Image (cartoon, rainbow, N blue to C red; front, top):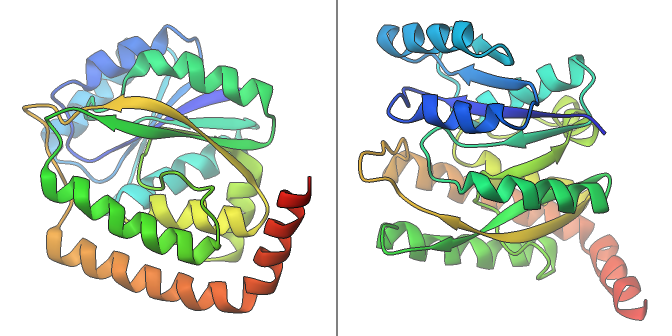
Length: 247
């Protein structure tokens, strides 16, 4: 079982050196996808690539969004023969000590996507906190299941092969809709998904790239597509739930 890290990054410079330094202790290759950041940020990323032997920086010429950067990282991981890729955000939100738990769960459950389930402190913006419950409701409808405990946390271990197969078959959203859509569509395809609770913070000097109007419209349209996709899959999903209950 081979692992690498994937860090999507658009202009996050405040704590990226610290994040990479902590990840380097795991001795896994680190792939940071520079999503067309500023010249100053790109210069910093290049200097970090020289500083850390295991770091590879991939540069997007045009901004594609967080989802597009993660997809680029997963394609690269597949090309290099990695079995699993651990997605970590660049802004210091994630508790990197929990990577040990993610890895332990991944090794116990091969071919499974392991995702963080956020435990927030008072730093979380209230509108972001409550908006998650709207998405949780729609994901429950789209999967006819309560199994996807959280679909918005970007702290995950992806099994690389089924992800790349999905990307080759379907054009997934490339911005803030990606984290949700990829879990729903992998669930539809029968990929096992498990969750661990993990602390998530919103750093005081953090930069959010969430665009309230554009991204909410994009996510709403995604849920519309997934809802209609669920309708013709509903016999399969219901049958799967019945089998699960009978086990």
